[in-house]
Length: 131
Image (tube, rainbow, N blue to C red; front, top):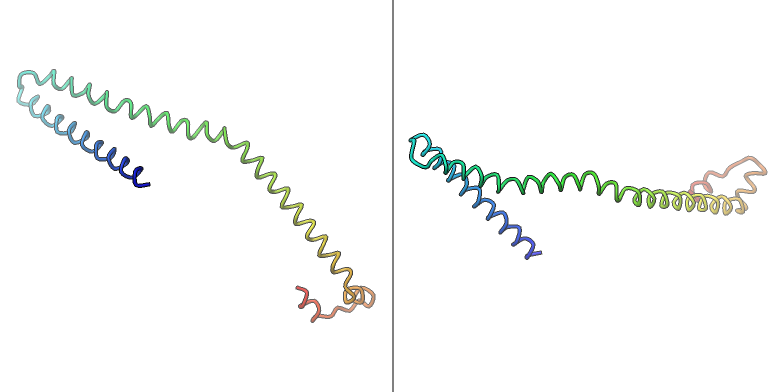
């Protein structure tokens, strides 16, 4: 865990450092271009090339990752998950049905229930006790 945190922190710091260096170079080129300094045009082209070479792989990585994560992973893992949920649902329904059948069988064998069925009178204390 500490190793992962330290590597992530290092990557973040290096990214901030690179952004600062590119920003500083951009400000310098901007000032030189306004002063019509010699070689400022070539420096601005080089800086633009550096920016493209820096941002293009990162942009490609982000777009590719989003595409893979949003499109393909959902497709790859949705079917097994759906099948597992269907299987769990059917097992739960089967277990619930068996439990209901067992409880109704148990209730039908009680003498109080049989007496209530014959006389059509229910003992409320018995019903509260079994509930």
